[in-house]
Amino acid sequence: WASRPVRGQDSVPTNPDPKMLAAFATAIATRYSGTDGLPRVRYWELWNEPNLNVYLLPLFRRGDPASPGLYRNMVNAFADAVHHVSASNVVIAGALSPFTVNYPTVESIGALRFTQLVLCMSAGLHPHPTCSNAAHFDVWSTHPYTTGGPFHSASNPNDVSLGDLPKMKTLLDAALRAHHIVAPHGLGFWVDEFSWDTNPPDPKAVPIALQARWTAE
Image (cartoon, rainbow, N blue to C red):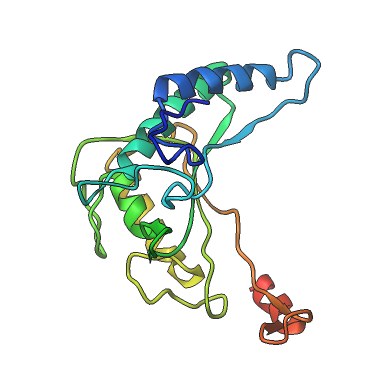
């Protein structure tokens, strides 16, 4: 609805206009504010896996990451609009795809790298600011799929599987201290999607008993 598509990319949201997105956010948050006989919606998540080119373009411009800055502008416009309708509304950002992908038609920026770029923070054990931009949201979320068990880490240092969640939490905490995250009511960190395939029905997948234990862990 707020997209500014380019030729050949009409099926993928491209370069959404933050002002148009804010107008849409104001409209839907007002409609579902609980004051017009409709359900009260308090939790608002912006986008799904914006670090993946099948959901948001452009991923890169002239070889440099473009979607993190675009997404930051979108989040700020969306969050300010939703919070203007009600300060008690909760805005969830992120919802990131875990892995760095570089296929002919599918590309992504790894979840940790994308988060660093959105928050203008460095890599490493002690993240520090790399620019002065801040992002406005209440919760950061990610999709830490894994090729192993519940404590397995991704092989690429820019990616985030379940075992890498502490690295992302360290980054978020550093960004909050640096005032690169604006979260007046405190910052949440959520996993809102993960899974394992099971046997049955897939004979090459994880036995159901093991999947149940891993899910609990």
